[in-house]
Image 1: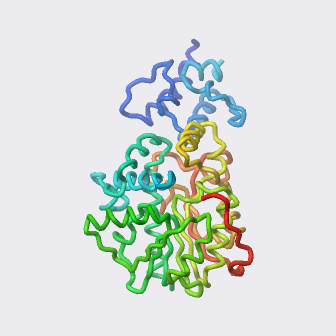
Image 2: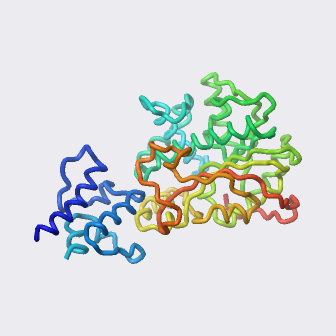
Image 3: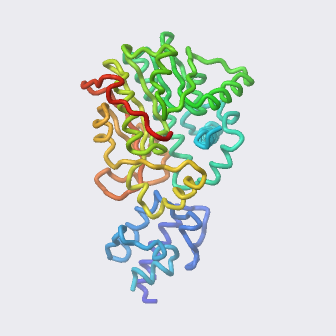
Length: 80
Length: 289
């Protein structure tokens, strides 16, 4: 993974960690929606953070949640 | 009890948690723990996340503040708690002496609450009249039969109810209240948003509510317009987390209303619009509660 992608994805991970100070890490394959690390009301900010980190606009109307469930899926969907 | 009555226990459970916080609680409801059983904590756990507990706590305080503000500054003599559920405001808030409070809900729920509060030797701090009704029927006639006066200014409290109704049912309820309201009458109410009901992240929560027989049906992204269409002019509109609505206690960013597609809830105060409909002429009971 290029350094820039790693750093950008790190922004997403750090945002999740900032919301859950009890956690020390977010494994790449952890379902952050199923585990409620991201919920319906933090979702808007979550998408915004991914947009800022990836430089890509995300159309939430046509969004498939599976694109956002794990850091690996986010990387595959928005950082390549 | 009706399935929807169990959601009253859920609300009481959230009020209990708020009451038992070590510090920073938004209110104290010393009766909430006894009113939450047997299913309140189970439902609270089942539906946790998405700010549900925080929302109920913030909403409770917002409505408490609205009640106090109206009663001690406006000329209102009667209060109606519509679908009052396990609300203990009559027992825990200070009330002016001249006030009468009508608690409207299913008879079985009112009887259960009354029995539990009696066992706790709780005494109401205001003149309370319990009115057992089915809000899908002609509840206004029953309310009037219990002494409610349509020529006296009223504060209506509609908390945690409208999302259980269809848009038509919610509109008819507000129309009926407006028609039964003398000049100067007020409303304190909460609503959810249409965007919350549509959002992909809320569908599991909404599916679970549906499976439990208590679906959320109605939300609006323009509460001012909806209330206006049904006889009420908004005087205050807040989202949880804003000043006066749990600022500092809401664990999420508050998104400006102009950002579309955000799942959100609304807390509002309103006053009866000048236009007064004639009671009875356009009232059609809804099909379902």
